[in-house]
Length: 376
Image 1 (cartoon, helix red, strand yellow):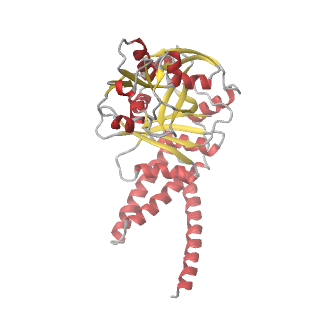
Image 2: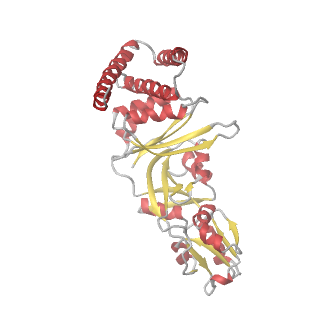
Image 3: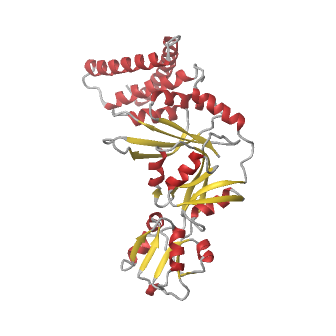
């Protein structure tokens, strides 16, 4: 067979495959008519396992490529069948109700829970989101979650990830312990400064205080000055206040320009952060599900079974709907052996019925599934 003939044959095969896939998807839907979703799930699982085992027995030289191909076909079939089913589930009802009941405009004021003290980056992010915020400060991220969950505060602001130092793992670890919904996110430009008492020089500094995220974002500078002792405190603003209240003139804080002005400190004119492209993403959480107009980002969390390809199978559902995953985070589940909770952010709006159906499918397939909200 010539090269040209081979190319033509490839086109013929691809058209044949496309036709067979269409027939297979249609047959799969018709085969499940009148059957409950749990029965469908069990039937599919038994058939797919049996087929894969038979494939290996019949074709001894079968490779992982064929397994990937058929697993992708099975996942495609599962997602395709969604379009034929309704979404009369508790989750779908909650989503639709939130879309209908949420005010058309995001509020400009409210009681907001923040971790830290005045001058903290969380406070700066809060003022960017709310023009007239009434802020209540908490020592820990857990305190922010609890304040929202209990109804003490209407909103909570939490840092979730930094562009140069990665995820704020303390927040992710707390997510599984609390019930909340994300209603907005905001990327804040971070510009760390080395704050000292007036008159202190760089050569005078013996100790630096800051939050571990800020320390990580300034690691190169700190490595170059390894003689300086590093002290981790609960917040960059707390670090600045400690310097202002201390009688020592040989200590410094990695903090913000806001804290410099607030606490009457000076900034040593030296570049300390690893990159000027330094942003922290904050999320705004509420107790009740709200979906404001224009919401186009969705977050979920779930656990996956201990089997090869479990994550790939889940991700294939998003790919089949052409949904863009913007973040995947995994965190170990406390008290379990090598089990992980996965957090997924993707670009999707619940105004799309296909997206709602996908969420309902994931909710039915995973016992540990949580819809964290669709937000602006």
